[in-house]
Amino acid sequence: MSSEAERSGPLPVVPFLKLPPGAEPYLEGHACGECEAVFLGARTVCSRCGARDRMETRRLADVGTLHTYSIVHRSFPGIEVPYVSAVVDLEGGGCVKGNLIGVEPDPEKIALGMRVQVVYGDALGRKDRDGNAYTSYFFEPRAAADGSAR
Image (cartoon, rainbow, N blue to C red; front, side):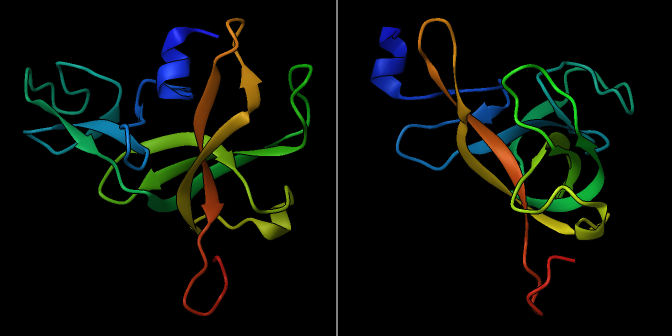
C-alpha cells in the first residue's frame, strides 16, 4: 500500500470528490461568474456563455433530482449486475452521473424527478494495484414528508 494511502486513508475515485481531513466528503464544481452555469472539472472558459477566467470553485449540494437512469444488466467481469446508473441534477446547479442505490433495479420502483441524496462510502471494495482503497459517491432515494421517495 502506498504511504499516502496509509497516511490519509481512502483516495477519492474522481478529482471532483473532495475528502478533507476531519470533515465530511463533498462534490466540487466550478461555477461561471458571468452566467452561473455549474460544471464538474476545472476549466478556465465557460461552456455555456464563453466567459474566460470567470470560473470559481463551488461546493455542490448533496441533494438533487433524478433526471434519467438506466438499469445495467451487463458489465465488466466482477461488477455485480443489475445496478442503476443515474444522472442527477443537483440543487443549485451541477449535473452528476453515478449509481442509484437503496432501490430495486426495477422501473416500477424508480421515478424520474424523484428526490435523491448524495451519500459517500467505500467504492464497492475495489483497490488499485498498489492496494489503495477508494471512496466514492452514490445516490439514494430521499424520503419525502409523506414517507415516499417520489
